[in-house]
Length: 259
Ligand code: SAH
Image (tube, rainbow, N blue to C red; front, side, top):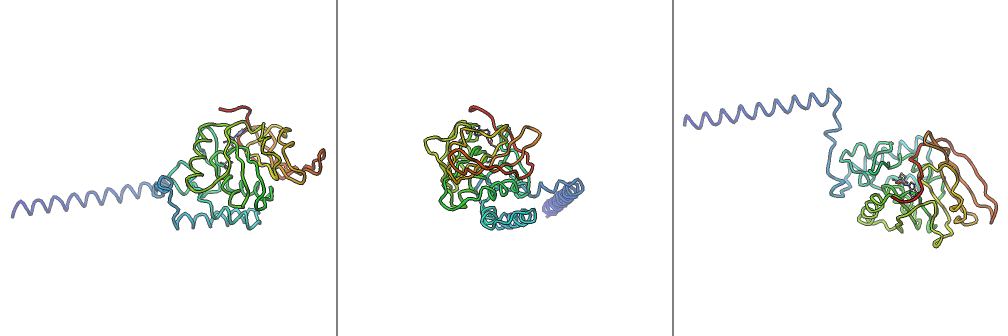
């Protein structure tokens, strides 16, 4: 009887100490703004898309709309693609912030607004043949596929090529994947209705212009490591191209060769 009483007292005391410790830890994390720790989840490991993710995505779409993206097909596509699955981090809050994020191999998944901006500017229509340079995480590629395009995507970093190919295939997206130097394009599959370059090029890649259909459009950020100007190039006929400028952006550089 006495032992039983001592045991119960001991358990009660232990529970109390654990409870107080958890309270103190939570208070510490809140005071020091470590709130993101509570947001850690394993959904991107188990490929889950929950109502919470959908809610965060809805807010992201609203933010992008407020920043000036009005094409409803593009906004719907952003609302459908589970961006958290394209990031290594388990911190889902980051996935639905309008920010670029590291994806490994020194590269980044583009900021959602930038993805939306480039996609809107590209003016993608259903069944169009689109060449994407820089598969990266595969997120932009998924957006193009959601718009009904037939997508050919090239990545020069083997690690990212393998990773995004595995991920996109697993979640049901079916582009044509290529590991290679995007500067060369895909002459065997040309011409393309649209060409999208998702890395900052020092100048307009001439080989890719040749692979653009007459009436087609290329979107490419041109500049150096300090920043780039978004350029749209429309092919008028065999020799004539019309160029327009669409503001400043910041991309990782478009590099030559493979790695
Ligand atoms: N579209 C990507 C953006 C990734 S960042 C996404 O949605 O996540 C740009 C990518 O372009 C990087 O992965 C980089 O390795 C790749 N890249 C840079 N130069 C390239 C080239 N010459 N050919 C193919 N890919 C290139």
